Amino acid sequence: MTLYIFTFALGAVIGSFLNVCIYRMPRGLSVVRPSSRCPSCGAPIKFYDNIPLLSYMMLMGRCRTCRAKLSARYPLVEFLNAALYVIVLNRSGFDSPLVLLVYCIFVSALVVIFFIDIDYQIIPDVITLPGIVLAVALGSTILPDPFFRTDLLGWKSSLAGFLAGGGSFYLIAVLGKAILKKDAMGGGDIKMMAMVGGLLGWKGVILTTFMGSLFGSVIGVALILLKGREWGSRIPFGPYLAVGALTSLFWGQDIMMWYLPDGAIILP
Image (cartoon, rainbow, N blue to C red; front, side, top):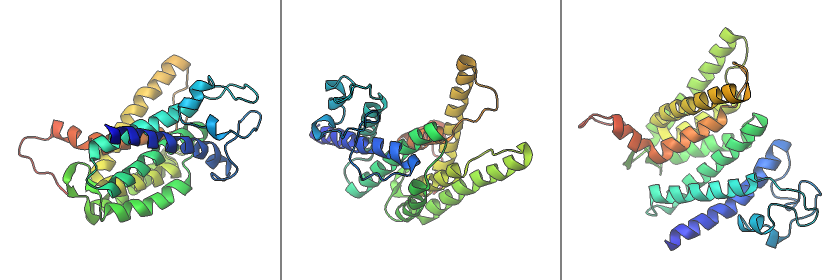
């Protein structure tokens, strides 16, 4: 229990930093300097007002200096990242701290992508490009197959995932542009899926794409019915892919076992 509490607390602290990344990355600002400030009055936030989750509640969601209302997204991101870290620990165990670290970094990257793409409909290259290199390198050497956890993913599955993720989405972008005469897939989505494929393998690409499309369809139809969004209006796909990737990472093996006949062989 102590380990889970520590993991949750660490996730919340990292989540506080993710809020900085979400706000500053799309604006081309440094995520290191200056220190955190109130978005309304610009006053520096004291360390005792920057305690994840607790400070927001103690301040009742307002800046101490100007009393402007602070976005509820701040504690949401902190809690979400903390909860995801706990799930990573629960699903992966502590047998390999390095694997645990890699997965925690991965889910944090997905959290940042989720919220930036919602706000700006972009996925920063500063996340995906280094992420592709690290995903293939680590997926080829130390990471387990999320669909068959007793085996390593291996370079073949990692490379196949990289090619399947980036290649299939690039093909969708090219064909969509030719047929629909407009962008059907953003470059950020292509690079994101190349990263996801390198880390989760080709099976992860299939499930991530399926789950992302499912979530996107359900939410898209709901927005059309409830908020009057037009058919064909642009909806960022990155958030749904992020949810699909998390589903593949945490429950890929369980989902596969639901549909896999008894005695069937799982391909590497």
